[in-house]
Amino acid sequence: MTVFDRFRDLVRGRIGIELPGQSRRSIESFVSSRCQARGYPSVEDYFLSLAAADPAEPELQELVGTVTNGKTSFFRHPRQLAALTDLVLTLVRRGRRELSIWCAACSTGEEAYSVAIELAMAGIESEVLGTDVSKAAIDVARRGEYGGWTLRGVSEQVRQRYFVGIGERDGRFLVAPQIQKRITFSLHNLIREAYPRPKGHLWDIVLCRNVFIYFSHETITSILDRLTDVLNPGGHLFVGGTESLHGVHPRFALVRLGDSFAYRLLEPGGQGTQSFFATPELRSPGAGSAGPPVAPRDALGQAAPEPPVTPGAQIRAALDAYERGDRPGAKALLQAHLERSSTDVAARVTMGNILLMERDLSGAEEQYSAALDVDPLSAEAHFFLGVLYRKARDDELAIDAFRRTLFLDSSFWVASFYLAGLYSKAGRWQKARQAYENTLRTLCGPVSSPLMQSFLHGMDDMARFRSDVRAACESNLVGFRVAPGR
Image (cartoon, rainbow, N blue to C red; front, side, top):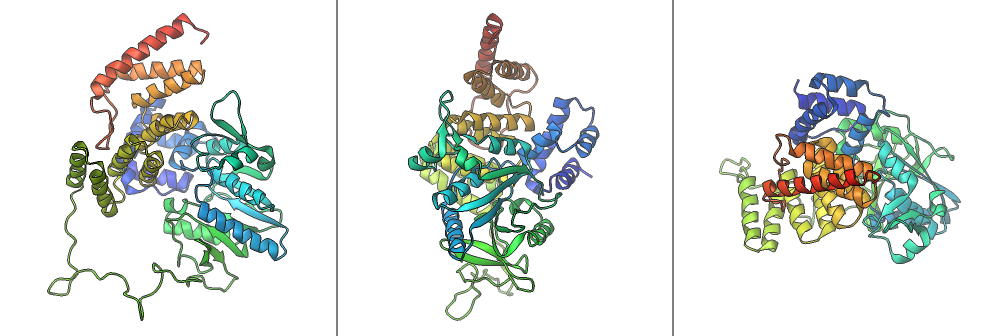
């Protein structure tokens, strides 16, 4: 069994996530890096350590936090939030006084807080639970402290009413106490643990967004089976906008809710494979419908093969256009390639880098996040998210992203150097000194530059950049020796 197969089995068993085949290269690099960083004499020893690790063991928790790293922000999906609020208001008009909502796989808590704020603005009492498998994510959610980038979708009125500025930390906010007390956050593994229940015994609404994309069909079916035991019949399950459970489980029916949709849990014996409404994507071909496009066929009636796609040539053409100054043309070519090859991580990161240089931070984040959906162990995608958050002046998010980069690839000295600067800015002198020392140690070793898969990263002359970074590290470390109290 290969390193990739063994590691994928381990992650599936400990975390429940199905790592895609595109992660093979990243996994092999990650395992090699961790063995070296932790001093394990062999891959076998590292695997045995993870397999036997307590769930709270730092190495396993760091792996969980990296693999399940969900990019989120406040009020990120306004249509779905509006649909959820309208649904709750309908239940209140029918006599419900208090409702229960479970935000499963809530990451760092922005979604759960957004739900609580929406319900508070509507004057609705609710019990909200947020859970996640990552202890680091739950710790952030419990603190309720966030930077400006995650609050970019929050109106000034909502910010003033439901957030408290932290005077000594520029651009940082705490969720107001009246919202924090509405929510409970706890660790939970959707695969391995019993499902929680509210005080009223069953949940009215469950949000489980952008989670099913990481699971196998069998795991998804198992999760839905277990949700039928804790969700009220007639209750609703909200999933990510790109996720479809249509026809997966007989008791979950797709329903339209305003400009959004959800899955309604039918009574036992009900059939959920038929949608409660028809959309062009779901409607069966019939009278007045052209039906799905018909693939071209050859003279024998066999489906004609699609013309071969050469990813390198397509991306090279996009880069040529970019170098000529035709940025719209470059992006159009990359987008056309991604429509054919949506799992091309290098192309995703390349597109993100173009958008980042154009200061389209939201667009760049979407591309990097999409790359991590395909390969959650891509050190490069995590690194450029850190660069993005650094540009957005959200230092805590940038620190988290650079730490994940280095966890995945300890030789990624550019991330270590940026991390040192962020620690210095925050006055975390000991961590800053360690980061500068780690950067210098790596630069003095055999690694000349981080291994980049993307085709455009704005660091064309890494050798020259390396010498500049080395000089900066040496200068800063001299400063630490002169002023040891720093």
